[in-house]
Each structure stands twice: as C-alpha cells, then as structure tokens.
Image (cartoon, rainbow, N blue to C red; front, side):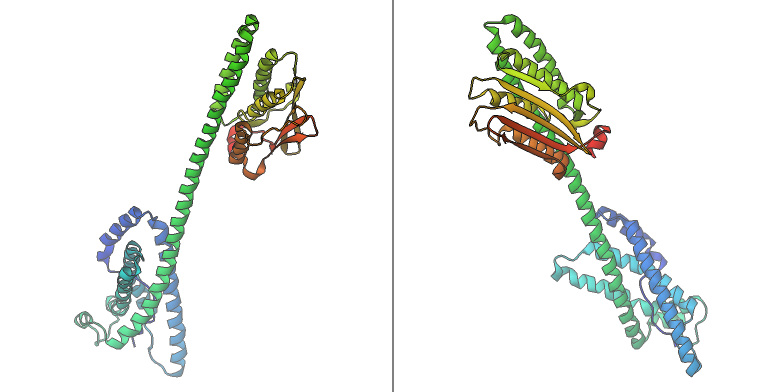
Length: 394
C-alpha cells in the first residue's frame, strides 16, 4: 500500500527558473527572500521528518499484528518531499505576491494555490516510487501519467492542504513582521531627521533674537560713550563668531558655553554698569562636560531683560554649576522687581524646554519660577555627559 501521509511542497526541476523569478519578485515587493526561504526550508524539513517517523512507527505497529507493507519506505517518502519542495516555494511566493486584499478577489486565488499544491502530493509519491526503482507491476510511467486513484488523491490532498496552510501562515506572519520592522526603522530614521531639523530651527531662533537685543544695547552707548560702544562692537563680533560656531553643533563643552555667557553678560554690564552685577562659577574647577549648544544663552538673556524690567534697583545675575551624582545642574538666578510677573511661555524658555525634550526626553528637567519675593530661578537638570557629542547624541 502506497500511503500518502506526507507534508509540503516542492516542484519538479523545471521550477528553477520560476524560483529565480520569485526571488526577484519578492525583493521587488520589499521582502527579503533568503530569511523567508530559510524558514520555509526548516519548516519543510520538520514536516518531512515528522511524516517519516510517523509512517515508520505505524508500519512497525501494524506489521506486528499482520505482516505486510502498509506505508511507503523511508527513501520513497524523503524523495516525495524533495519533489514537493520546489512546488511549495513557488506556491508560497505566488501567495505572498497575490496578498489578501481585497479578500473577495484574492481568496479564490489563494485557495487555488493551496489545492494545486495539495494535488501534487499523491503524484509525487508515485513519481518517487518510480524514480527509486521500487515500483510494482501496478505502476508504470504510463499509469503515472493517468494519475492516482481518487481515494489516494483525496487522502493525500487533505493532508498536504492542511500542511500548506500552516506553512503559509508561518511565512505570512514572518513577512508581516519584516514589513512592520522595516516601517519602524523608516519611522526612526525620519524621526531622527526631523529631530535634527527641529534642533537646527531652534538654534536659528537664537541668533536674530540675541543680535537684536545686543544691537539695542550698543545703540544706547553710541551717543554718550563712543569708546565704550566701539569696544562693545569688537566684543559683539567675538560673540557672534562664537554664536555661529556653537550653532553648527548639537553639543558644546560646558566651559565654552560659560565663556559665551560671560562675554554676553560683560556686554550687558557695560551698558548697565551701575545696576547689573554678575557672578559666575569658576571655569577652572569645571571638568570636561558636554551640554547642548547655546542651552544657557536664552536663560541669561531672559535674566537680564526681565531682571532689569519694572524697577530701577540693582540686579544680580548668578550662574551656578553643580554636579549631583550622574546629573548636571545648571542654575541661572536673577533679581526681579517685587511683585514682578515673568512669563513662562517666552521664546527663550520655550526654546530651552523643546531642546531638552528633543535631546534627552524624560531624562532632563527644566523649571523656571520665582523664588520668594525677589529672585527668579531657571534650573536645568540633565544627564552628566563626559564623552563627547557622539555619545551624548546616542
């Protein structure tokens, strides 16, 4: 009895060209062919081994009760699965290309592929028997061309149809995983590009805003102190050079940022020498740490503008740097007029919040609020970055 308890697909040698075409089609469809083929091959090997073991065990069990051959021998079953393997690959590739939408149109084609593969099971078994030379007088090549009997064909087809369904589900799931993963990678790349563009736009907001305020500062000096105005123009040139250099980078050394802040405050102090006092952390005691470029500039500008507004009294601006474990704390403190209300939604503060959110997400915090009746404190808490902008960006 030539049993038909086998599993999955392969087509005759003439399918080689079709497999190559299927490879090109799968690549064009955005799917990686070789991982799919590896999974399909592993699955088919599992099916073949399972069928061979099942047939062998059943043959031994039945032969112990009534001697005879109830199942095809091992070599015939192995050859059957080898013959079916190309058909399996071709049908699965065609199925992936057809897809499942719209269902009313693709479902008949998908069922047709499954039935086509399932119908090859019994002929493949008979062909294997003929190829290995163990055929009986009942089977000749002419008999093979007429096709197997309907009962054997139905039994074999049912088995291989279910097997094909499991294999197709496995490959379709993996193909879907590939598409989802590729979509996530593309989304991540677009997000990084958008983040870079966003940071560049935020840095571009600083240059005109800072230049506008400093030019007004110098303008106030020209009429009554030309020498001071002239020196301020030189300092402004140095400030703009640092501003442009820092604006081209995502991260800068903290000491460079503090030098920029000192230069800006010195320019403001020349205009408001009788009112503005500055205090800054000692640069010599600060290790090589990296911070987002120009992250302090909006806070310093905000401290000067809003500290001097609304009253004629003295104003002190303090810049403090504190290392707390693996966090860096940057604090800008300025004097404000009693009962003064400083907005939280200004361009400078909003800029700082957005940049920290883009570059550090929830790992960084920014607060700005009045402390008591006479001070305003803007505070940045961010991770301690010691190893340069490449690691910082990562």
